[in-house]
Image 1 (cartoon, helix red, strand yellow):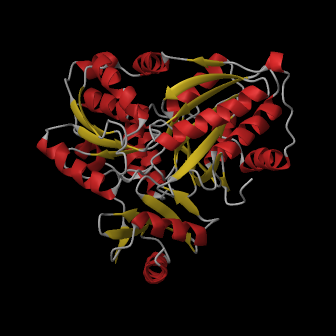
Image 2: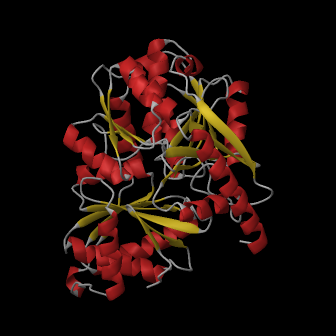
Length: 453
């Protein structure tokens, strides 16, 4: 098995047909099936990227060889997959989606029976079992089946519709613009928006271009287009989802993208006092002021999304939020759900009668230190990947880049079409942290250009 696989919290990443080939995917499936046991049920899904389809089928074959039954959702979002795990009594859920780091990379996400991502330790155990071939194959008479769940989109849509106030939304006849980023959310959104009475303008809702660039996160140019379209179309909000719909970027009616803090702050306006929220340690301290105004209780957690969800379950928290524009509505599911976050925001607009820009403007002001680093023709994704490797233990992936710890300060790095925008909360050491990271990025740009990487 290739040593070039990258293991992260809840997922295995590799380059399609290089470090992650169908043979390896089948071995990983066999290893997981051995861990779960013969007779188990596993649900699987993928995005629309062809390597995801190829690797999912190979992984499913490995599961079947150990006597596991596979329920295949075909192209479906991660929120749909996780929503179905507990309701179907599955022992695990597997999602195949394009990697956030490599244009030809695939991320294999693994969820347990509660819909919570595997810990890094459990992922390492899975890969080590596959590498050492400690696999128990079933007898020919006990090989597992593959069944196809054709109605997962309808089931998920019905659940979401029951979770939001449809009557409040439908009466407003809102219009939204949504970029599905070539992901399977395009299979869900048309009917879902119709069910809640919202007119949708969908972009990039077809299959990925045959030989075009495919990225997990929205491209900087897509964000720039949406900033203009929301104003030109008279929409109440414009949104863009990542490839598997776990993250969402909201752009208000004035064309201003909401930060992760602003997204959570707006959602808290519609929550009752006493709402408990678990947030990642990298969230800015302005969130504490927002919590005071809304009567929410913030619980900061150091660790991965896996750790955040575990704390939320123990504390009975209602929301989980990360600095990467991920929102988990724990009463609904244990998965970050960009589609549901968008609809709950639209619900709030309907109930308050205010625009998103007005709600955003009413939040406490974020005092930020800014800097700009020109890309000079370097691919932003490659640059962010190299930065991640240098900051391996002190970064969070966001929907537009990274949030990196420099000393005791968290610095946001967001990709624009021709530059990286750096920002940090105006706290002690922020100027120095932004300046240091700016110089480090400039060095990385020179190294990248000279190496041709």
